[in-house]
Length: 299
Image 1: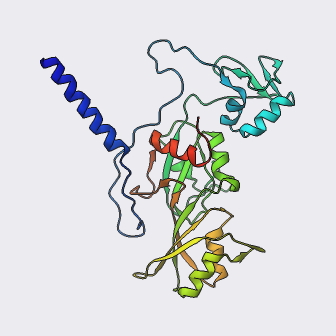
Image 2 (image 1 turned 135 degrees about the vertical axis):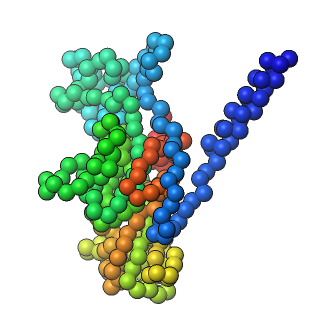
Image 3 (image 1 turned 90 degrees about the vertical axis):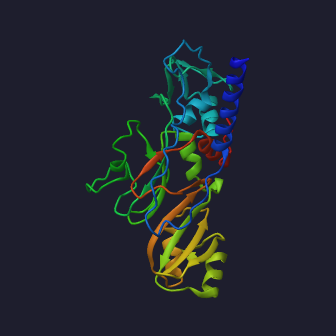
């Protein structure tokens, strides 16, 4: 009887934890205000493969998926490479659709280049401060966003770019396929920014930004634009899905506005939330799943 009660209580505790884990975080929309408290650490993303316990029976993985996850091509492009005879497994050309291999055992090459799959996929969210360039290395010796990740052992790369003076949410990962999709304009992933401008654009100015303005010879796609605050300056929230270089700053310039501060608040389903400037955290597995669904990856 006693042991049965203990099991029931444990089950209730696990159920409570599951509900709490699935409860969405309350969004915070004013990173330009007072400093936020440090967020609770998120659980690490689960690695691929064996965890050091009992022997795991490995299952072969489709070649096009292995190639895509290595960041060499999209899945569709990988299928074409296979059909064209550009892929070899253990020295033998493979052209059959749906072919599979074990990346931990088999030597897989694409046009002679060895395919290496990360031992564990890592997904990070960073609150980038101003003054850091979004690159792996800089030829001029400037500080890069990787300088903020000294405790991260995996080799990760930024998902897209924020210019040197732009702040806010930057994702970094070693998942090549996800990076390619998040940064490709055809997937229309939303990017939400808070921008401090030097004056109020007025109702007509807001309508112009929403409808699209011409920058560098091309009109921008319709955007979501609203006035956030006029205290301590005029803050606008601008949500776009194109991701053209310096797009938000150039949109403001098209109206004669100067963007004095620019902060990315959200990328797709991932919010900056309460992450302090210069800090990073691992994405929770459910956040990774949300990102993958947002760009059509379901496995």
